[in-house]
Length: 348
Image (cartoon, rainbow, N blue to C red; front, top):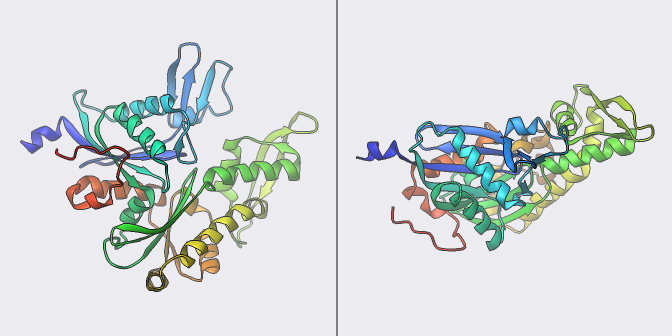
């Protein structure tokens, strides 16, 4: 009977991120990994594209097409667009038109208000999910990184996403100390845009800044002399111009934001009970999220915190893997689910 029902009802995990959204489907694994971007035609009020197709349009659209990022700093900024984005996202892998989603587990940043949590829940419900449960992103990341989160020992996870950086110490299935920063991948891009404007008098877009961050960005001095040619508009003349951006340029641009992140990690450790601090010294710090792939970031954090640092395997998919663990053994992981603003029925 269960096998027949699984053809029509499925549990789903959604890592609804500011920069990228990943979807985990029970018994199938991660089935979607797309940028959280939607393009809408203002004349017809219809969505033209979502995900990677929409991201390619950023900064390149005519007046009647808007490219929107419905989440800012981990929070829904455009509720209707988030609904439409989720609906289109879930349609992408629905091969069976009769398939519906019985339970959805969605990762959210720490410290969201009840109103913000409710908006996430409502967006998923209106997109076709029957029941919605929320789990804090660091908890899901710790599960995805195979950390012993149910044991009486501390696990320190740092999730550097697109809009937020979540720092949390987890023990016995709960968060002991946490801090959420609105400094992450998007802020890194802004730092590079500002640096290039001030240093080279060149205006560049977000996509160019992100490319420079990926290709030549680093948190510490490195032996490789990396450089990239970037093109933009000369602020003085208004004409196109190209400059060479080197690793040390990007490092200088990111220095202030990276210092804020490392200082915040130290603050979280300082606020942790002494017994658990000893566990962190033994176990180290685990870093995930897209920001974890910045060259030398683990060495920088290790130097500032005085603790070994490990970048988890496939850091971008870490939260989605954790959601998958919850989905695959829902009853066994029920304690990790954050209480939603309104009680949800669990009699399934």
